[in-house]
Amino acid sequence: MKYIVGNWKSNQNLTQSFLWLDDLIALKPKITPDKKVILCLPFTDIATFNQKLNESGLPIEVAAQNVSHMAPGKHTGEINAQMLSELVSYCIVGHHERRADFAETSDVVATKASFLLENSITPIICLDKPYLDQQIKSLFTQGVEVSKCIFVYEPASAIGTGNSIDPKDANHVAHQISFLTDYLSPVLYGGSVSPDNIKSYMDEPNISGVLVGTDSLNPTLFADIINAT
Ligand code: PEP
Image 1 (cartoon, protein in one colour):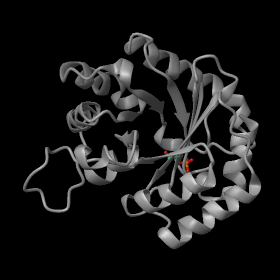
Image 2 (cartoon, protein in one colour; image 1 turned 45 degrees about the vertical axis):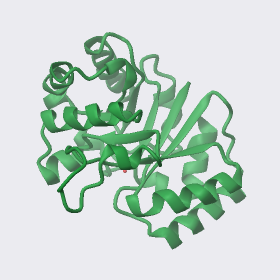
Image 3 (tube, protein in one colour; image 1 turned 120 degrees about the horizontal axis):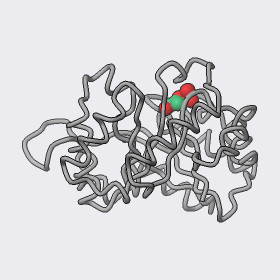
Image 4 (cartoon, protein in one colour; image 1 turned 90 degrees about the vertical axis):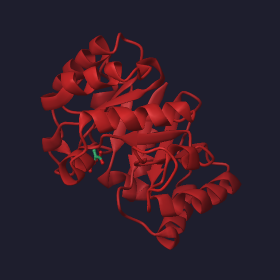
């Protein structure tokens, strides 16, 4: 199975998301059974976008980009895993932007992953080299079943910069992540993936897919990435 995960970040209101979907439907991307296409949306789009997606018949799954590290209760403004469980089967945690801009620690990321798994949602856990060992250690310490997670190697220097890294280097780190997680989970690469470089990552033996930010916002580029996989 090859994973193509789009991450819209804090972009696209519902109206814009509908226009995006109309364009993607018209492009007829080739989503064969060996490809799993997952689109991580803002919370505000998830439910209504999913209805429209189901009507279109496109085999794409919607997902979330974040979840609360707290159990349901008195936490104003938080969206917890139990709430998400009626809407999505996947959720990103530990994205570099959340670690950098919201000071998320490896322990918080592990707590989020635990809540997601308790609610039958697959965590898509982003990792980078400075905290690779520490991040994975926190998962084991908190008893997260790593076999039920998807991992993504995302070098900070490559996120949103156009400076994708050498596929061989990405493959090397992907192997390191597989080794540290007992070879039980898919490992993806993320960082300036585009239609021009997608194949070079997919050809690497330890890389099971990609996480795409910028180019997932453009339906033509996202369709090209799906088709080139
Ligand atoms: C991302 O959002 O995780 C990402 C990799 O973004 P970009 O594709 O823009 O580098």
